[in-house]
Length: 343
Image (cartoon, rainbow, N blue to C red):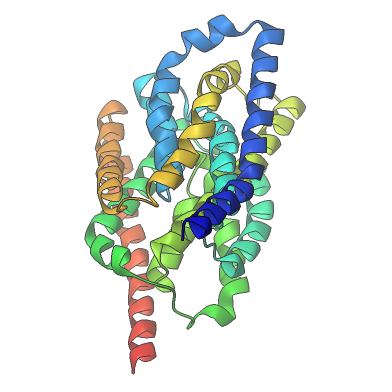
C-alpha cells in the first residue's frame, strides 16, 4: 500500500513537471526584465495592484471569472483609469495568470470539454482581433465600463439564483453534442469581441453555456473556461500591442499597463494555479457566492462612481434583464434535455 502511494506521488510530480518548468522560465524572464531595465522602483511603486491581484488571481483560477474581473474595477473605479487601461491590463495580466493556471490544469490532468473548447478557440481567433480593431476603439469609455458592469452583474445574479443546481451537477448532457462545432464557434466569436472590449467575458460565456445548457460538472466547466480565457488573453494583448504600434492614437497602450503588469505578474503566476489547486480540495460554493456578490456590488459601484443616470441607467438595467432572460432560456433548454435523458 505504501509503495502504491509512493508511486502515485512520484507520478503526480512527473505530471507537474511542465508546470514547474513554466514557472522557472517565467520568473527568470521577469527577473531579467526588471534587473536589465532597473524597474525595481516601478515594481515597488505599484504594490497596490499587486495586492489586489493576489485576490484576483485566486478568483481567476478557482472560478470562471478572469483576473481582469478584479483588475478592471480596481483600475477604473479605484484609480480612475480609463476603460481601455483596465481592458489592456486585464488581458496582459491574464496572459500570465490564466496561462499559468491552464498549464497547471493540463499538467494535473483536470477534465476539459475539448469538444466545445476547440471550436471556441477558432471563434476567438477571429472575434478577438475583429473586436480589438473595429469595435473597442470606437466605444465611449463609459460604455466600456457599463458593459463590463452589466455582464458581470448578470453573471453574479444567475449564480446566486441557480448555484445549488449548478454545484450539484455531475458529468454533462449529450443532447447538444451534435451542435458543438456551431455553438463553440458562436461562443468564440461573441466572446472574443466582448473580451476585446472589456478584457474578460469569453470565460463567462462558455462557462454559462456548459453549466446551463449542457449541465456540465463545475469540475469540467471551470477549467474549460480558464483555458479559453488564457488563449483569448494572449491573442488580445498581442493584437492590442501590434495595433498600438500601427496607430497609437486610435489604439492607445498606456505605459502604466506595463508598469502594473510588472508588479502583478509574479503574483498571478502562482496565485491563479493556487486557486485551481485549492478548490480541488474544498467546496467551490463559498467562493462562488462571495465572488457573485462582488459582481453585483461592482455594478452599483460603477453606477455611483460614474454618476450614471437617465437613459444610460435604464439601458444598463435592461441589459441585466436581457442577459438573465438568455441565461434562463439556456437553463430551460438544459432542463428539457435532462428530463428527456431520464425518461
